[in-house]
Amino acid sequence: SSQGYAVIAINFHGSDSYGQNFTNSITGQYGSWPYEDLQKGLTHALSAYSYIDPNRIAALGASYGGYMINWIAGQPEMSARFKTLICHNGLFDMRAMGYSTEELFFTEYDAGGFTPWTNPAAYELYNPVNHVANWTVPMLV
Image (cartoon, rainbow, N blue to C red; front, side, top):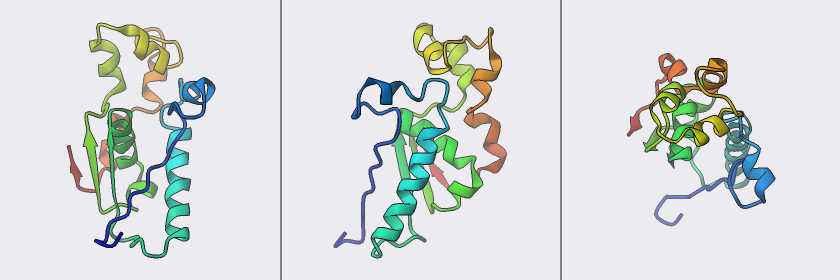
C-alpha cells in the first residue's frame, strides 16, 4: 500500500479452498452467495483498513470472477462502490453459454442440473445480460 494500492482477495463461495461442499454451493446459485460474500468482504475491508480510499476502488475478475464483475455491473447498490470494473473472459449471457457449448455437463451443473431448453428460468435467474440497462461504471473488457 506504500504506492497507494491495496489488494483485497475474497475467497467467496464456489472456490475450492474449503472443501467440495463449499465449491458445489454455487450450483444453481451463481449470483447469490458469492455476490453476498463480495459485498460483505468489501464492507469489512473498508471498515478495517482506513488507508483504503473508498472513492478509488477497482474490481477485477477472470473466468468466474469475470462473471461476477458482469453481475456486479448490473447491480447498482454494489457497482456504485467502484470507480471501474475489469472483466477478463467472464460469462456475459448464461443462455448463450448453454446454447453454444459442446460440453453441456458444466452448463447443466452450474444451472442446477438443467439445460436451457428444459428450464430456461435457471439460466435467467443470475444472467448478467438481463441487467445491462443498469451498467453505469466504466469497464475494461
